[in-house]
Image 1 (cartoon, rainbow, N blue to C red):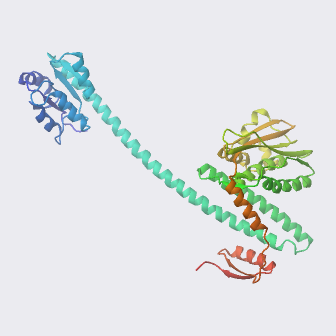
Image 2 (cartoon, rainbow, N blue to C red):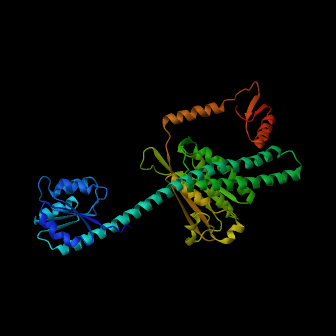
Amino acid sequence: MSDEKPIILIIDDNPSNIQLLAPYLTADYQIKVATDGILGLKIAKEEHAPSLILLDIMMPEMDGYEVCRRLKKENNTIPIIFITAMDDDKDEEFGLKLGAVDYIVKPFVPSIVSARIKTHLELKLHRDHLEELVKERTSTLDKALIELAQSNRLKQIFLNTISHELRTPMNGILGCLDTIGGKPNYDHTKMLASARQSASELMCIVEDILVFSEIQAGSLVLGQCSFSLQTLLDDLLKNYEALCKEKGLEFEYSFPPLVSGLVGDPRYLRIILDKVLQNALKFTSNDKIGFGVHEEESTDKDNETCFQFTVFDTGIGIAKEDQEKIFQSFRQLDGAFDRTYGGVGIGLAICQHLVKLMNGEITVSSQLGQGSKFTLEIPFKKPTKASLETDSREEKKASVTVKVGNRKILLVEDNRVNQIIEKKFLTNHDYEVSLAENVI
């Protein structure tokens, strides 16, 4: 901080007022004087600007109000104290509204003027210090936000990269197992089946982590396409029918014919239903699990319909005080669950996030030792007539049998493992395969 005295500018056309004030101020301040408003404005804009201005109002050519107005119009922050013989309340109100910090009526007491000057300079010092702190904090915050944006960008790049890097070798393992699965002897076939199951389970964990990371990064975007809910459920539930049979459980499900088409994200809808069904199967050791679906009454929007999905089981159940916890990330209800039932504790957290993204709701009702029931209410857009006609054309195209004359295929793949798997798959189906590692 400079040791120089603060500068006080007195703008007053009456020399006697200046002579009266000066002795009280010179000990602590540098004094500059202007006998009219124009000269006062010039001095106020000098490089070494005053720390405070004492300003008379009634002056020729340019009055004090106009001087104050012009200074404030230029965002000048110098504190201004009016010293004037105008003692009407409206004059004082007008001066303060223009931006003055104080208003002193003549005749004045010099010592009181000196005290007010000191107070306002201290206030300005504190204000300037606060503004400097705000600038520093704002600069620090801006820098942090830039670094955070950069970090998020790098995180997204990492997620995209790891998504590819994790899936590629896993697809290679699964592909190799599928390709050779039926040819070794019986013992080898059992071991290969176990290896494939383990690889599939690992792939599910990888998929969960990647989806969860996308949710946490805020980068997951739902798709919007027309799909058949009936087809999606038939395929999904057929798989669980087989899984329940393997575990000795009854799988109870039935529902009326569903609408021919909906608009939404079938991939993430399947993930949601799959994870809830997985939990029901995992935590039930006897009796049964079940699934149901029905279309609810139309929503407030004419182009939307809402479906309620239910999954129930006769498994271990969930205590009332724990029912909110199951939707928390990486949360297992008991440490023993990690050993007995496995899992990383993000399946239901993923479900809840996805259901919320779909503007839906997931709830649970359960009794410890008696089983659980999960209810999901999810709205979907109704397909337009044009999209239904497009879907119908696509289905007809898909059903057409194409006669292949020249069974030659160019396979463009840069991954060595995928080259082997895909080439083997195609040659097993009597295709002649030419291989290229890139498009050049």
